[in-house]
Length: 284
Image (tube, rainbow, N blue to C red):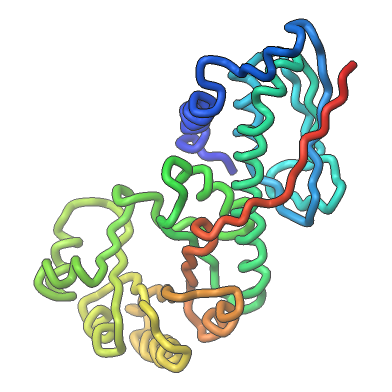
């Protein structure tokens, strides 16, 4: 599930995280003898979906390649309270220095994966897919997108460069829905094109203009149902429909049950409440 772009991003992201934490050196870990060897375990304190093994591995690799990390519960797998997620063995100084940074990655990415799994479970059987957004922690876009996949969700566009999403302000400055879609088609960019609409009339205009995918922004449940019915009437010219706006765990099943293809939710990556993990040491 780790694509090449995400793999390539791990080293620099981890290096930046270590630079801000370790800086010129870990003064406290310096109290430990250089040849001291330690073993440690990362333990789950709650039910969660694990994510972030590659980032934790890279933390310890950059600090000391002699450290060995053995994963018992891997990415996308569920851990329960008191489960041992991994064991770590190697130079104590380096493990101590990497403890917080490794846990930060694991706790944040596992939180995103766990939240996503909760939303995915909430819409089970509706046929709708759960999408993330660009509302991610700066610097962790690819990592959080990966975590969403670990939780069973799907990725929307990665950034502004891999898809066209025509929103309200784009429509206004481009001269309207038809003009915006026409410009997108003429751009020469071989990428998906989606347009946001705010009411039924705009939906009709977008469908008449040949929109392949439409974002229904802040539609009520009745408006979503009407949009689905209208879209079906276009037959083979119907668009994929995505619902967005003020989506919560309490509302998402009702939204998905209207018949839309996708529900996008910023809470998957924006409202991160880190999961509870502990690292316990053993000195040999």
